[in-house]
Length: 136
Ligand SMILES: CC(C)(COP(=O)(O)OP(=O)(O)OC[C@H]1O[C@@H](n2cnc3c(N)ncnc32)[C@H](O)[C@@H]1OP(=O)(O)O)[C@@H](O)C(=O)NCCC(=O)NCCS
Image 1: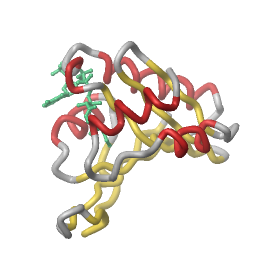
Image 2 (image 1 turned 90 degrees about the vertical axis):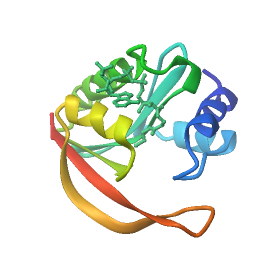
Image 3 (image 1 turned 180 degrees about the vertical axis):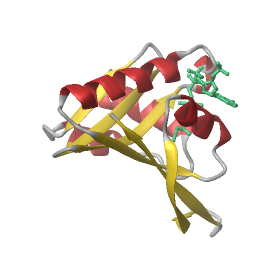
Image 4 (image 1 turned 60 degrees about the vertical axis):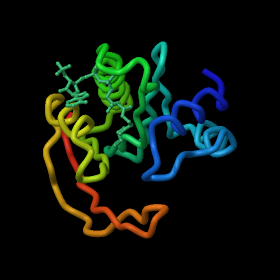
């Protein structure tokens, strides 16, 4: 999947946090600490730092949701983090993102903290972030 395709799926999936540009994906993928998992219509990106991994983002194109791609991408991201010898994985999610929170809870993630008014929306509206964790 090209950086432009990643950016297109990201733009179709996010307003908050804001979509990432193709150039931002190029910069992220240049790091040896990031790993990209792709499916037909989606992708997940993790970053490792010693024994900790972070799910930076996961997105499936709106036309292809609820077909199991998100679950499969997340499972493969967890395997990639384990292979990188990570012991814990964290993520941040907007606290009203019901589909993503359901996916993460189903995969064994649990809420660790709430960051109040963490995200700044385009319209000035602030949203809180849930920090979720899973032991690997
Ligand atoms: C979150 C996301 C990646 C899920 O991808 P998906 O391919 O649709 O997910 P799957 O089909 O694999 O579904 C896996 C599970 O996630 C949960 N889920 C997915 N969509 C859901 C929805 N609309 N409502 C409730 N639960 C949902 C369910 O538990 C589902 O299991 P089930 O189908 O057996 O009920 C997708 O909705 C997306 O790209 N959202 C926009 C980007 C985003 O918010 N990413 C997360 C940011 S932290």
